[in-house]
Image 1 (tube, helix red, strand yellow):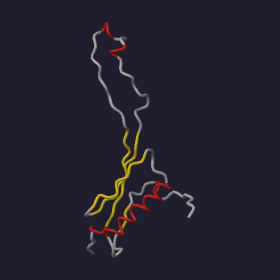
Image 2: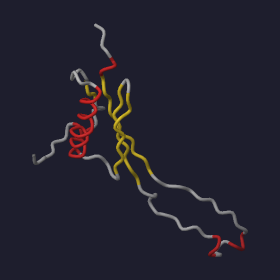
Image 3: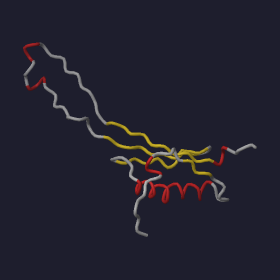
Image 4: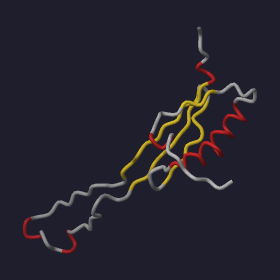
Length: 113
């Protein structure tokens, strides 16, 4: 049986640590000179999550979040973003949505409708 990969929508997320490293060159006698010091951020400079859905003809939507995705975030993304993508790109409702089997895909969450 032949399966049409053109109708599959995949999703995945990427966790990104935001930090940078600065090198300061100085002479030994300048070690504690305020002009030669660079402030640092403990525990990195923050993080963000990038979530995306891709298909044969599109890489849409791409969403950035400031923290890990929760089950309710996932329901919101699928309901508002992926559903819109399916309606626009697959008007005959012949799309198959394939998630990556992350734990948030099967968590229980209470959503008030």
